[in-house]
Length: 105
Image 1 (spheres, helix red, strand yellow):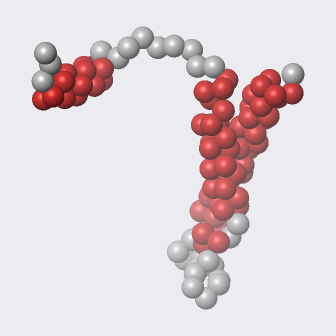
Image 2: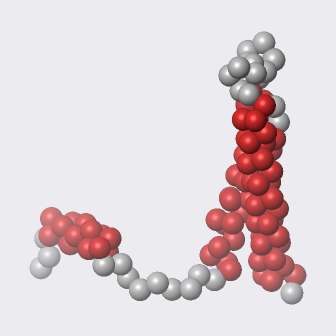
């Protein structure tokens, strides 16, 4: 007979052991990747769109302080925004491809 405390200890010990000796890896199917890819799409497009706007640089009065945010810094942040939007478009293509395999064909 297994006591409750012993089962509790076995449960957490097995999780700790799995950190150091993980189970063998397996290939993920498209169905399992759809949710994470869709979340990456939304985050990349949202973050990239925010970085492309001048909102991160505007102060309380609505103007950009060039001493605090020089032009080279603004262009760098906008470049990161372009990269995030491009990654979001790539993820959009992956989501459409997975969704079309699942439902349209």
